[in-house]
Image 1 (cartoon, rainbow, N blue to C red):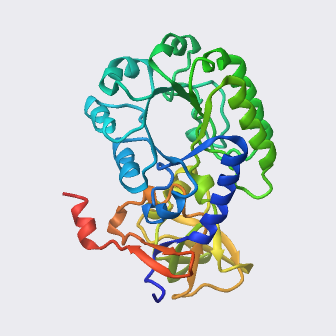
Image 2 (image 1 turned 180 degrees about the vertical axis):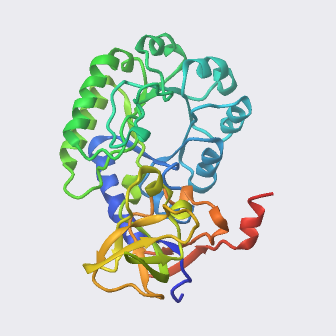
Image 3 (image 1 turned 90 degrees about the horizontal axis):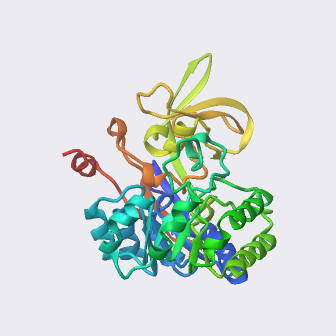
Length: 368
């Protein structure tokens, strides 16, 4: 097809395949299983490719669990920070494992999911994160059980535990030290269990990551405690695989040039607004022309960032923002009634396919 109208998310399957081959290597060498974290990426139009390399999906809500069952298959892990009784009954029909966030939820609902492998999330009191907002072990965290004795008391009800304690962790020595700490504190409990999830947030598909050492450490951990190790990659699956493609609508001046594109951080790359980070521009290439690139919403702080580019931007110029896979499409919204980006996939054979287009009817239907 011809280039679609902007804005649109562009997912490139060849780049996905490069990450997936690394994941396949980790699974083979370490014995760990990998389940896609749908909270990060749920673009089911490429699940046909992902399914060949991953063991299933992990969810944070009943809707995600159902999506995993219907569009991915294989293993479905169902977790939630807080289940209602109706939630538990709905995931019972689609899940292969149900993981509770607290001892109270486990005790309250375990009979509702009798016969399924059950787990509990543990807050080990250690973590790796660049942002307090995303730190699962921050002070007063509600994410998981912080008291090892409380976990020990419910061992008869569970077959595994989940430690989700990393966020964008590209520091292998820090991860290895954390595994040592987990072993010291929770090792005796792990020997009574069948599986352990180490969560996501590990940047092991990054270039130059010490993959062999990572695999050896995972394998050793699993053998030492006799458990099946699970990883929950999200961003590691889609890092570097997707872009948000936009068009410049106008260039205004207020002390310096400000290019306004037909997309928005608030609506289409919300994480940058939340964490006060700047989007990386994949195109145009870096150069000497300084410009602020801003979104078209009415929010004053709707700014992608300040850049120096090879060419001056003008109305009609195409701007492509990198890293638009993880935590982008899952967070897109209808703020200001802005046109929601289409979702396009460049398949392995080079074919460009627009798999989803959103129009006014979608906007209208989302509100009442």
